[in-house]
Image (tube, rainbow, N blue to C red; front, top):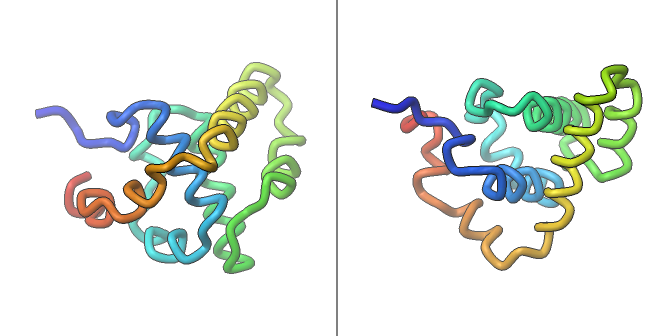
Length: 116
């Protein structure tokens, strides 16, 4: 049986999840304890999720694009930095996607701790 991971849903889903995290602090509060970095394969997505959750933990707000840029700036590995930037761009591009509510309300996703 294949291990259930958010990465199994593809890059677009992960970008939309990151877009939800960047735009909806209530959503972050609902998933904060459920979302684990091991659910993702991409080091770039892990970096963005980890820093987004850290920011939420400290400020109880979703991180803005500018906040995430501050986290990205110190990355010294140029390949990793570019992957993080590309993942962030992908999230920004889907910020207005029609199905973000589906991602936030999806029963399977909301019971993440049970199916992962």
